[in-house]
Length: 146
Image (cartoon, rainbow, N blue to C red; front, side, top):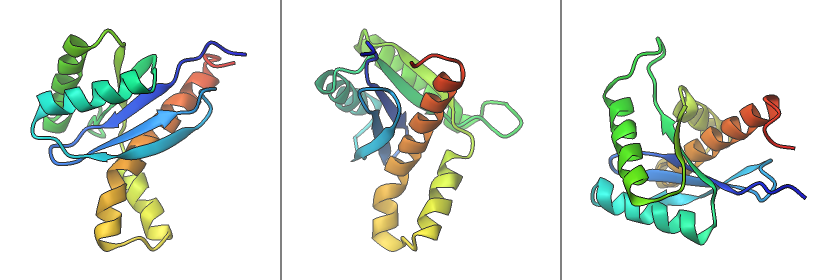
């Protein structure tokens, strides 16, 4: 049995933030919900609580890097949020390039004919799940998960 610890992924947003959690083997990502918080500090508390409750070994934050590889305002906010989290917890926090994750989430939702309020409620969670699954797959490709 592997000593892999679960990973929590965060798709940071100003209004809504999506969360996803890996399974115990580090093979699959599952969305666990979208949260609304009044500012970064409250969101840090919520994310930290989820991390402790689920005994995660790492927190991944999606970094919305521009298509040309530069960092824009959204990426800067993700980095700031990561810094807040690092101050709040001893759990390692890593930024992960999430170019196109929201676009892929919208493509999935279009394919499943999900519209309106339902779409708004799930797009951030689905984006976090896509970020985490991509991260887990990258670990497998590097031989990082048995």
